[in-house]
Length: 480
Image (cartoon, rainbow, N blue to C red):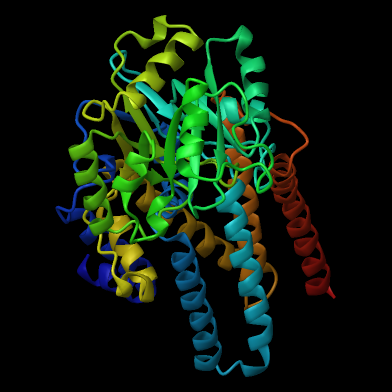
């Protein structure tokens, strides 16, 4: 038995090393990702997160995108991952002395990395959501549709995404217009969904972005021509319409004076934004929390969803008991009143995160190694089992493929056809499970998102055809 185990380890050292590494990390008492108060970075116990079963079944294919989506500096993370992959390709070519093939390897790596980015941005992953609680109304203060210059999704897609994400109400805050909010309210007339009108604007003499929530008409027009001159002017215009003014993305400027904005009429501050997490350091977060406590200014967590990627990790919980019984105008009035009256103690900015991560410079210089550690050390046990099972299945299938290829074709099995076949099979299986389990697709309209999704779907079947043709041609060559 011992000799058989030793022989297996010698025959498959990389498989054994990988499984041993993730098993050791799984045994570490590191905890897991969960719901965190974005202001205090402490766990939240009175709200529960619902994770779709599909996330556990397909953990290797869904878990990594979900993990990367919580990165606090996605730009630095992407650059680091790409650079390490590039160095690995060059190192592999040098070790194998395949200098003439290095350009081909580099081109293939760039294509593969680009496809991975497309996969992250446009695959409709099953969404995490907060389990409904009649004591808390889950709100998103910041989102966009294609009525914003950088938005990808329609009002109907935005509406359905928020429902699937677990929001009870949300604001559509287009850049310098309210067309998306009006369109969603028209869609919500015959449904119980509570989509509210907002607008994202700037003022002439300030570099920051502001959210005008609960307004009835545009407060900015098309900037810069019609922008208010000062923050106080903007606050007066918003308050005149019965709305509330929120300072967004302020942490991009580490020297900002939040108290000054409170005196100018700002009613609340963003403390988390799923689209712009960089530069929100613990020092800046602590400063914002102290200002919030002293002046009773609410802190909010926003998705800032534009359609880039299907996943977000932010919610704002408003303590409104029995909110489901209120109609849209009533609920909006309560939310705006809570913001205007500075009821910060009950409003909770919620994020899905793991607070004990190191986020210094070395975190991004050695990103792949930190990511490997944090991802597998915080993995739920069900996801760990999924990783083990899928690893063994893929390794077994590749071993079988090599034997079949060697038997019928040549002694040097090509890796590319196998990878294409597995990718096509997994994509087909993913969509089949979604349809069988009646998972709802993002509503279809003529958008870039729809085009990419269907492109990937048809590409997967196209790859199957290519693999079959390749096998047929290889068989003919073998016979001749």
